[in-house]
Image: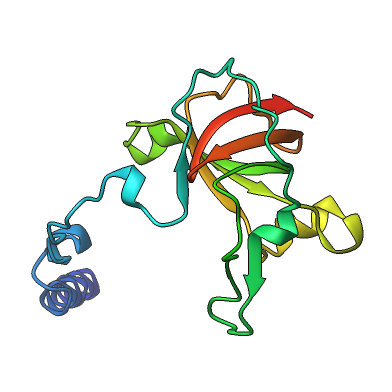
Length: 169
């Protein structure tokens, strides 16, 4: 008798929990369908510089601009830096590769992986930048995975916003 009463109670409890959980829909089925977004060409994406040259194309030897001179401090906590107004059309900058985003994981390898280039952290400390990414950085898109190593310094040449070469520095 107890066995039948216990099983009836468990069955009733299971049925009640099913009615409260949305009648068996999976969370992925309940999520709204993603809206179709207008995809921008990578060239038009703000702050991303394409590396159109061959991976063996060395830095051009343009005028070297310090990394800090590429940005102006705005004082706005949401957007603390903006590109400086007086950047020459052609320039070289020495920067470290801080990290990269694998394009295969994102499913978009039109122009290669995204790499983040940084100067140095406060007082020359490279590791500080890893935990404080709010400092200025340059984002490039490149297929040169074998040539760009995270944590190493390079000389990057830019011509009108396009990365046209880089060399180990």
